[in-house]
Image (tube, rainbow over all chains, first blue to last red; front, side, top):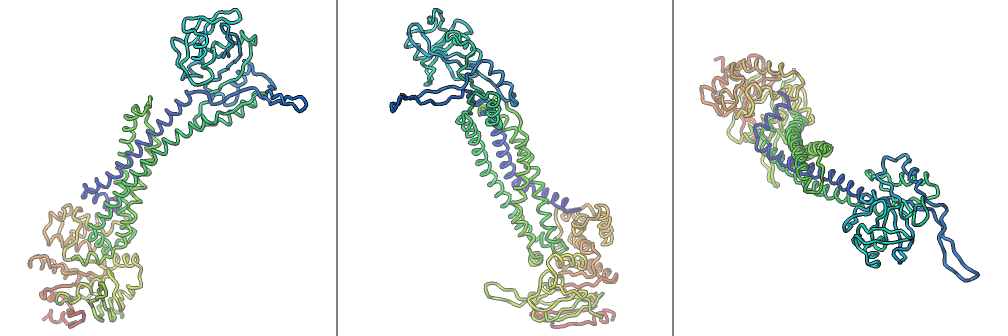
Length: 383
Length: 234
């Protein structure tokens, strides 16, 4: 017989009380682990979606504003590029130290050119990168191919009065209209979009690139480091993180985390309160027994130890079972929250067990201290 | 030689909301080692209060309690617990066994905080259960034992640390007369084995086995007859 066995035996004697005490922790930890696991999975899913959403780094030629005037007469200004970007720069971008973080590097080329008699902006990009660089585009019929095809922005289609299956001519070359872009609210609505090679050919600039869009995988978001490395690789270019995108990613993830932590904190507080109330009730109920133990020579520390062992057993069992159920519940619920690939998240489960133990033991502190302070005469008086 | 227990002008007041009642009023006593003293008196005379003060379960409102030369009121709560465990064995009228533990486990309870091996503890408990005549009933729960058997288990529990003094509060109060006699026989045996025994009782028949009778009335020692042994011998 030792304190641990005494605690264990007492738990078995008061099964319903032990179950009730454990229920608070079980529900609290189950909810916490379920929400935390779900949050982890949702964070990952949101991250994946945001990463898929588009670029977060923009690379343009470095420019300077040049003011033009004659005497006191201001003639406005113009931007002067220090150097131009070319398709060869893609290799330099993909060669940076953190290249494994680069999900896509997409070159764009813009030029103003004739389109069936109208002067429109042509935008060239690799046909194979449409899904990666512009996943939100909706194109009626089909996107353009590598050669001889264009997609018209919704406004450009209206100006040219062309639709899928029609043709657009420019500089003696005829392009088939493969599709029309649904309105996006962006400048591309007024553009003719084609393969970058075709647009470079129209402009007579066969290696020219107006800008690169880089999508970096943003887990832990080392975007600033990636920006610095690309800047080093392309000294003549201006490399900037699209901060808004990065910030919105962080904000979305943080919002999920805050919601999860808030709900968990409430449930855990209720669980802790249940432990406190049931252990306090147990101490009240066992005043005589505690008095007898003190009378036969138990030190206060031994009484504390007895109650902590009792709650410790309950907390451990209920935390572990709560964590197990929480993980299972999170996996089952994950598809309902837009998580495509549900995976068991063990770190919230381990954290849950630790919190459950801490909660149980902390909830025991006030009643255990009260029990330890009980005078042995309480038992004698109850004779 | 100093007495084993000495009480000097011990008073005990219980109070509530400014109203206090004296359970003991200036009791002075000396009890030598090896005595078998019976404390008698009417209900409310202060018997149980005296026993709890002697056992260090509560501190008197005034006065001094010395046991084996140690002033009990000078000890901290934990040191007092250690002193009780090492020096005093308590036996209660209602046994106060833990109902979810077997007889053996109940006897082992005072040894729970100790670091000795479970086997050693069990062997010690079994030896004591055997000594109180309950051999073969080690695995029984209190609910499976008679009142007399429960009291024997409680006595075995009180003896587990081989205390110098046994304090018993109405140990036969819940038992029929035949079973009560058996328990008193057990106390006599323990006394003959060298234990100091202090027993609170209503039953004057218990006096026959004691060496001393202390009668309380209204919180004061009304009679103190140290010649019981002579009386008993006659």
